[in-house]
Amino acid sequence: MNIENTKAQMRKGILDFCILSILQERDCYTSEILDELKAVKLVVVEGTVYPLLTRLKNDDYLSYRWEESISGPPRKYYKLTQKGQLFLGELAKTWNELAQAVDKITTKTQRDE
Image (tube, helix red, strand yellow):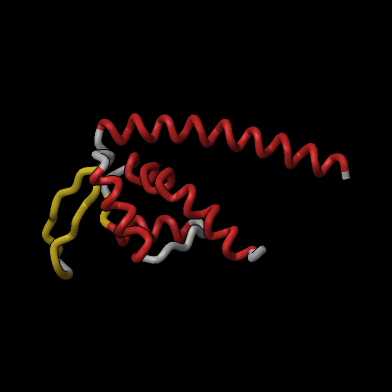
């Protein structure tokens, strides 16, 4: 099994949750989202994030607005919708349950060694 592929799949599985969590704090444009992900070592390329943002928007979890920029073209700022906030709440609940379960299993496994 290829470890890099497994790690990439794990990261992909939590990107929705991470992006929605970033947007819960404030509206952002794509570069800001990428910067926040990189800052916590979740390195993701634009080619991965753009389709994800489009899907989240199409599912009504995000909305967007265009804002003029003094340093270039207008920027698309994404915002969490009410439906997105509810979805994020469900993801947070699921994440906490999964994290606790994995922690119990991995901690038990490490103790047994």
